[in-house]
Image (cartoon, rainbow, N blue to C red; front, side, top):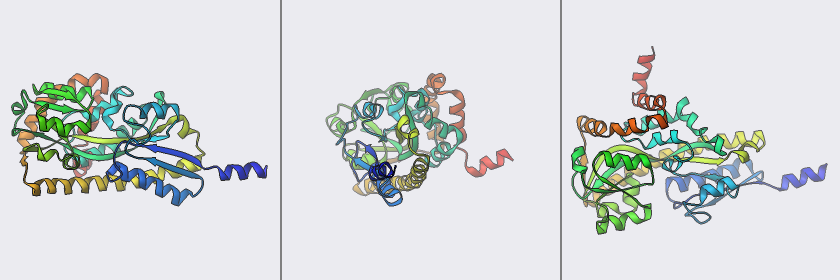
Length: 325
């Protein structure tokens, strides 16, 4: 008996955490922080091995690896989940959330937390939401009102909702990988794109995009996920401690992502290569109305109740408490 216990004590539970970005990004830092906190709090019982920069699996292979049990944790972009859970297309709907605080309120709500469980039938368990940030529109001409986007070619992630977003604006969506965007903008293969301030700055897109509209029209977020069978098979005390560590790391990652975006925005302003266009509340509402048919098109797939819950998160907490009193 004692021999078995000793053997088990010497065998840590290994969690391979694979991701496709650099270590100095919010997601890269989050994975590293998670590994460090697990080592600090769980000692030899659990070992987290982090594989950044697609060093273990690239974008196309990582989900398959998770389902096969070859890795235990990933943090893909929310836009990658439409084939596993149509309801997660909610996060790609344009101009749904007013700002990052509204996104936070929704993700902490019962509806937002429920979406973490929406892929259990596919053996995928969501654990946390990590922010990259709110998306801005950039182009080779000023984008002040929806008609300004007509005829322009925009790079998009591989998402049906994002595809439809630009079609609704009578623009031309072009799906391409993140790494190809700078050259495509430089050579005119596409005229514009949508991204967070930190992604625009780190990829030097502002150097080849003379106009950036601060639209805050969408979100680039990640979902930290695990293989559900693996997670449910962990000892209860270990799973509980890992959940607590993730809550702590998530707060730090999301604060860091916000700060990084503010710094990147200031760096773009300081570079002087792009004019930053600010939208008035009325102009932003005009954009929202222009793309609202996209909400209606995907409403049955996503669920009308979820879209309403997300809209409700746009009210400030003070307003929400007033309306519930």
